[in-house]
Image (cartoon, rainbow, N blue to C red; front, side, top):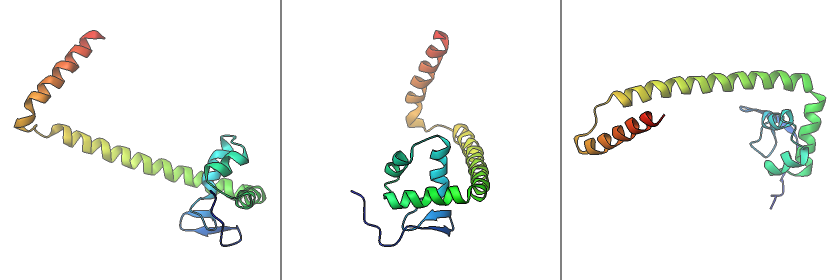
Length: 124
């Protein structure tokens, strides 16, 4: 069931970027799917939008294609930087966790795990 919008669909700038009014859906989310050649009806259904909302979004993208494309590239770069930050941070944390000594009560489980690892390595 699609909720009835309480306001006229439009595109507004929020802290998240260009967004469809009454939603948390950015034009960059829609642009991702347009780049992947999704049809408008599938995009509408994926984000649970009304016909008017998807039409406003597509019209805005078409009318401001250069601006939206430039901002979309910035969003992609920011996403890449954030992903890289967390991958690096998690990698460091995983090394820290791996270096921690095992609890005495878990030693039997670790021995079993090491045996399984050795067996799998030998099978390769």
